[in-house]
Image 1 (cartoon, rainbow, N blue to C red):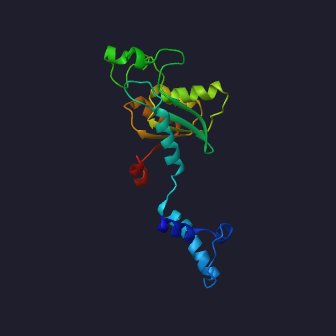
Image 2: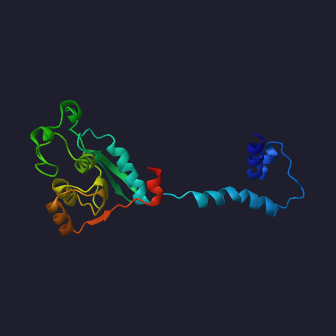
Image 3: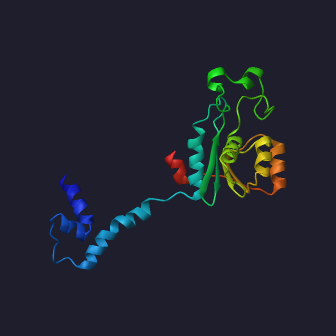
Length: 203
């Protein structure tokens, strides 16, 4: 406890010390006081690194994905414009309809491989739900950036193109050649998100 008090007194501001009744040593110069008080902020700058905007929004997509009710994979999507979140979405059944968690996966029952026969599924993809949420609430997403944990499929890609989305940031690929071709034709900027060393250490 004694060492903790010394630490607190050392880095406290002079005004706060006076309010607590602690007497400052007259022999210590004002310059030295300022140097001592600057240590915490300097220490903070050297040891703490803020995430980039891409890291920030990709972290949010992972949180959104945790709401997914899909039995195969959890996907999250976030629509962003001018560094503001416009809408989010995760893959799962429509509102008011039984979740795959409750009734089982139709695609598994029918033996449908990933990336094929998208119409044979009870759920909507994360990107679809994000776009639908924006439309439902009258939010303009023209020119927005789509952050998603997985690269969009062909259906999501076509919706993304027509919604006016200008950039896609994704973390893992998706086996859909046609989707990749159409996205390339649309001139949407596509960036593969690569976590920094700091981001990896925090996961």
